Length: 321
Image 1 (cartoon, rainbow, N blue to C red):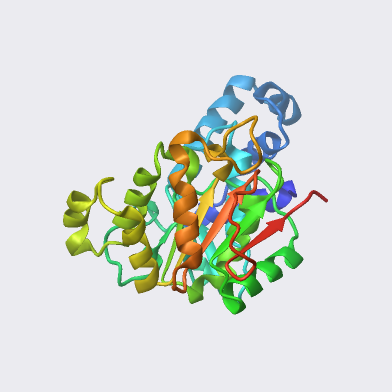
Image 2 (tube, rainbow, N blue to C red):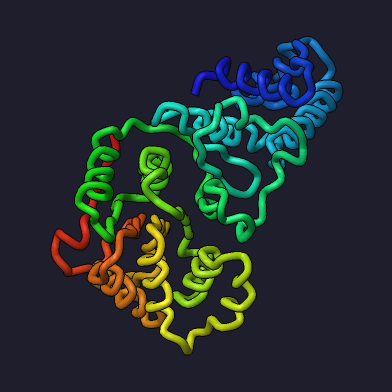
């Protein structure tokens, strides 16, 4: 990504937060860091002592950490700023994605409001509070950081048709690691968010069992006044699949399961579940064949076995450029 664009973005963010622009030395430190230079190299370029450049850098990362609500260091500054740059790209008029310290809110407000005005504005809202506010109905806390952008207009158009027109209940985005499955899904969300009551992103790698994954989803979907009771009542002994299906019928939900390949056995036929994850297949079948208006989006390096016909499920294979 263009370094000057990132420097300008950073300067604007800092000015909005502090009412002061970055000084020339801060910009040189930032520019050098984004170009992969070490402090001694930046010091040579600026004809300054390396210790002074390091002090300027340390203060700069602390300032940017306060502005964006993330722990920014020299090593991750570029990736975080690129991700924030992506968050400002509009796909549907004034719709945009605002990524803060713990989750991604999606809303249709003026873009200027995406820039934190103070520390409190970058503090995440409890995900189980104020479900009447549409912004709080989106939980992308487990979505990955974005390091690059890609142009997949054709794939997004196909996904939109399957989801909004064909009402496909399960869609698999299939591709090798690092090819852009997550980026494609995140780019798709602003284009279809108005059609869903809830959008929830879950990383399969974070859950040891299907029951723990379902607990996380159901707790998020539960109204605030019943949150504690739902958590207490929920247990693997109950028909958890039915509980989740009931929510998918009550609300139109977009569920995104990332890293689905983690539930498959290596060295076996493609789509063969690990012994302790075979219940995923039952859940997928129930979601595909039950009557509801929700959609399950699966991101995987390996295609799951969902032999239910094209009306119920589709697979989109993406390739490199």
